[in-house]
Image (cartoon, rainbow, N blue to C red; front, top):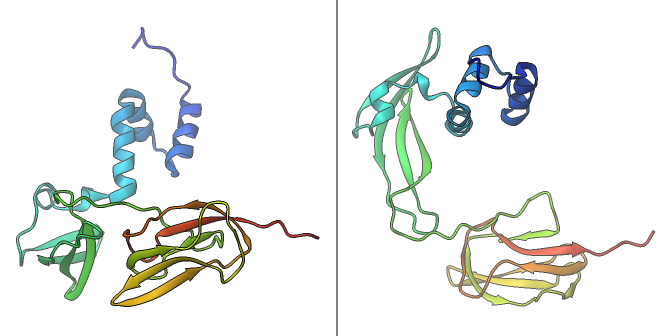
Length: 207
């Protein structure tokens, strides 16, 4: 320790709090000093999955068998009974499977990405629903026509992209005036609802 450079613990604690978004305990601080990468990886894991330390060790290490039930204590006197029921078929569009289970006797399901699938899944950016300049797919479907090109001036209601699903076609139109800044799809692309289709640079409004 005598050969290591000095550490500003107050500054490091502040930096860690800003990075990870929560209070940093003394144990966290020492872990970050001695094992910075391990601590960073651990914090990312907790941010993604939550506190998995409450799970039974075997259930964390290997999958549950169908019909197997575990008891999870989330705090003193509060338990969750989770019974694994089964896994659905692969959704080739999203690369996910629906996992079925019971939570305290009530049926539940959640979609989980299948990391072992051989299917190539195209991950598309999602449009920000609060940003009218980002035009999203209104439903799942296949792009059958792209009516706009980069640089086009558009007005509300102008058609941008045509989607087809269940033998029905839907025209996705501009909702604001502006100029097409970017196109994110091509004919034949298979889309999900909310996928980003077009970026529009809003027109300047004269005062």
